[in-house]
Length: 384
Image (cartoon, rainbow, N blue to C red; front, side, top):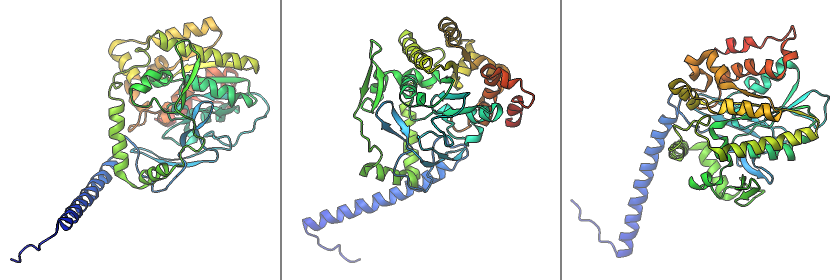
């Protein structure tokens, strides 16, 4: 056996660094291979690499008024454990077909978050697209993901959506996270307090956290992250682990039942502001509540639904029709409520959108629903 060559101190240091780098590379390659297998499991509960670099993030904090929004004329391929969808935005940044500021009435503006945007499903199967197809009434979809709540709905409506001709505004409230999206202390508690977005102060005035950057998503780090997102399975596994830790205290949270008086005051404030803006544009306003899995579980285990009756009563007092989807969706197929959601994600499935359309269309558009050529009840059957 040949004797080990004599090395200087510097040579020993370089040798040690080389060994560390080689072992790190071997570990990284093995970890990536394991992650590739993981993200291709059936119903993997997070995103996957799409092998297409998109330097400008699809959802990013680029709007100075309400924070997160889509880039105009954007394209993003979103891959997950149970979906592979390409999103497109129009010239206004809406995930919607091209729209004009001015058009004959009737026309509806829809405000909401990722549930209304239709995360994880193709646009033709979204609630807004179904209602537009059934009624012939334009449904201008201003929904967006990226942690978007009622205060932002109100600001978006005031600064953007109200500029479009319309005679009805529909607000989709998602209690599951809408209360938290208006709570600065909550966002600080999870380490996101410096993100650029508006919040309500204790006196219900509006303040902004973070620093606005009109070039958000285009820094060197953003480009590096975009590359990792596009090509590395380990990036998506890491994101999933972070998300599990991020929501660790919310897995049993039911927005329908676990809110407080401050949460309600913020929601009332945002909805009243939307009503005032709608009135200035001679538009009506309607609100509906969207249940998530934890709300169905709570309903079945304890029978509780605190928020629905409270909001419906508040709506009657304030001249704002409010529809709670939880009891009617449960009555349609409560034993199989899981089918309302994507199996790898908490957003509505094609069936969830179809059932919601069946419930909401006769409530929002009773005349169109009664027309001979309209048959929305076929949607839920086709989605089963």
